[in-house]
Image 1: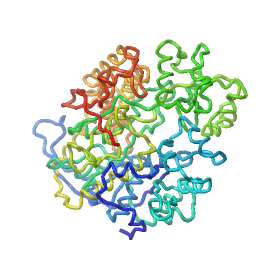
Image 2: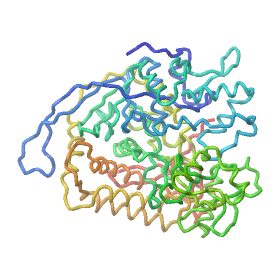
Image 3: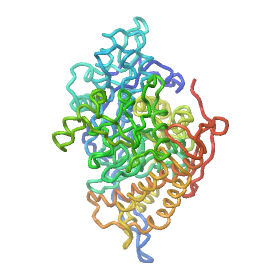
Image 4: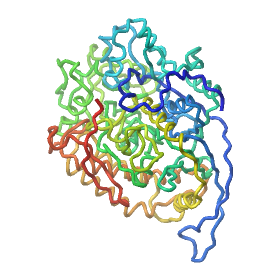
Length: 616
C-alpha cells in the first residue's frame, strides 16, 4: 500500500449521516481507478456432488481463488470509485469488484464525466440553473453551493468537476471553494478520460478485479465477510473477503422493458441488481422498489431508441414543444421554474393513460419549427449531425416520437444511519433503501457522495473487526448453486426468460400504471418463477465466457427485484413520484406518506408500510 496524498484534514471518521448530508459539498464529478493485476491464493475444497449426481456419488474437489483485504467495494462506477478513493485516503487496503470488462462500470464506464457536470459557461447562474430538465446534475444542491460565487469562481468549480473531482468545500478562513480531497494527479495536469483514471491507479496501487460478477454475499455467523462470484472470461470461482463490504452497484434498472430493438432504460445491461437481490434473499428488506425516475428520449427510429448517449430527447428548454398524438401541447406558456421532473413525468404519463399516447406508447417532441429546433438541449446537439450522417435522419422539421425511459430505480436494502444494512452487519450500501423519503429512489448525482459516506462508516466499523477463518461450507453452497444450473435440459434458454421478465416488468412499472396491468405482470412473474426458471437450460456447457451461464445467474436477481417492484407498485394505492395510477390519480398524504418495504420470505414476497425517515 502506497502512502496516500489526501488532505487528511478533510477526513472526519464518525461524522453522522445527517451532518454529512447537511454539508456544502457538491456531488458533481467523477472519480476512477483502472484495472491492475491482483494475485489471489488458490484453495481446494471438497464439496458435495451436484444435485443431479447418482446416489452415493463421492464428494468432488473444487479449486477457487481467495482474496483478502480490509474493504471490498462492489462496483466500479461513480459511487464505487469515489468509495475507493475514500478507503485509500483512510489508509485501508481495498479491492474493487467490477462486473464490466475494462475496470470501470456504470456511469464511469459510460464516460459520463464528459457531460454529467454539464452547464453553460456563457450564461450567469440564474439563467442556467434550470437549463436542462433531464440533466444528471442536482440543481438544488448545486445552486446552494454556488450561492455567492462570482463568474470566475463558478467556472473554477466546474473545471475542478470536469477534472474528475466530486466533492467540494469552502475554506473555513477565506470562504473560497476548493476540492474536498487534494489529489495532485487529478487536479494538477488534466490528461482527460481515461488517462486520469490510470494515473490515479498508478499513483495509489489500488486494485480492481474486473470481469468479476459477484453472485452472492458471504455471511458467516450473521455478519457479512465478503462476496463470492465468477471471473466471467475463465469461469473461475472467486471468494473476495473483507472486514466489510460496501455495495456501490447503482440503479438496478435492467428489469425495465424493451421497445422493439432497444431497452427502455439507459442503464448498463450488466446492471442486474446482483448484490441487492442477494441481500434480499439473505433476509434484508428492500424499500422504495415501486419507484423509477424517468426522462423522455426517442423511441423512433427503433434501432437507436432509448439511448441517452446517442439519442435525442426533450429538455426543459423545449418542453413547450411536447405534445400528444392529437397535437395537444402539455407545457406551452407555463412557468418553467415550477416544472420539476415529477410533474413532467406525471403529466406525460397521465396523457398516455388517457389515450393520448402514440402507437408505441410515447408522445411527440415537435421540432417542426425553427424555434423548436433551436431549443434542443446541449446534451443532444452532438447527435443531430450523427443521425444525418449515419442514419440519414434529419430531426429538423420533424415530430420525433419519444417515450419515458427509466434512468434510476429504488428498491435497495434498508440501512441504518450509517448506511449499513439493518439485518446484516458489515454490509454497507451507497444507496440505502428509503432514505430519499416517500418519493423513493436515489440518483446518480448523489451516489458518489453516498459512496464516500458509506465508506467512512465502514472504515469506522472495521476498526474493531477481525476477518474470521473462511467457512468452506458457505463457499461450497454457492459453488453448487451456480454449477447446478448446468443440470437442466429441454427448458427455455436464459435469454428467452430474460426477455419475458423484462416484458412483464414493463407492463407493471411504466409510469402510467393500471391495476389490471400490474396484476397481469405479477401473475406472469410468478409463472416464470414456478415454471420457466426450474427448467432453464444452458446451451453452452463450457465455463469459459459462457454468456448463457451469466444470463441465467442474473435472471434470478432480475426476477426477484421485478416481482418486488411490481408488488410494491400495486400495493401503493395513489399517484406519487414518477408513477401515475389511473385508479388513484391523486397523491394521498393521509394514507401513503410512507415507504413500502418488501420481504422475501423464501420467495413469497410481501409488502408493508414503513415510516418515512426525514433528514432535516
